[in-house]
Image (cartoon, rainbow, N blue to C red; front, side, top):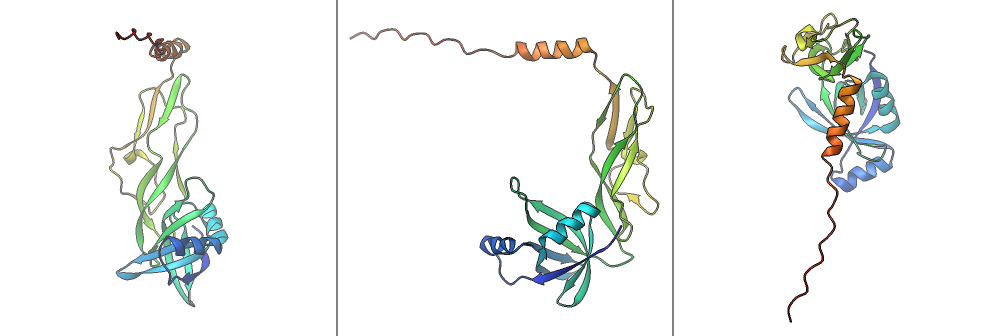
Length: 210
């Protein structure tokens, strides 16, 4: 994995108002912690950080320049606004060269299963342990030619050299099931439609006795 260099500034203001001012200035509020150090409140250049995450994925490795002092860091959490296109906050973990870290890596299913099958991906990311200088961006799981009833568990996922599994080995990752027939799909639609009950017309209220 490539390593990116970013200039980071120390933040002295905190709270929602300060965070908004940081974002208006084109920067992202961040916290750097780990290795027994005191948490550092930082601001990162938004455009540069977005580019790094776009290129490296969720486990981006950065060399932060904090007041002239370099610090290696791993991106742990990126909190994006649910509607607007900006990052609200970032958590960074202090790391050292040669260290192994636990990370979640995206799973990508490739290949075509046997005819008449349906591939269901049960797990989108898997927890592994890898060297900070060799964190995989994604892990491919092939379903080429697999038949109905085949299940791929975490223990079956091929990991890159130097990467070890931290997830439970029995966790289901991919399940190959029979593709539903046209008749089954139509029956399911009919069943769903039968469950819809139209509102009954209101019954006029009986005139009250005076």
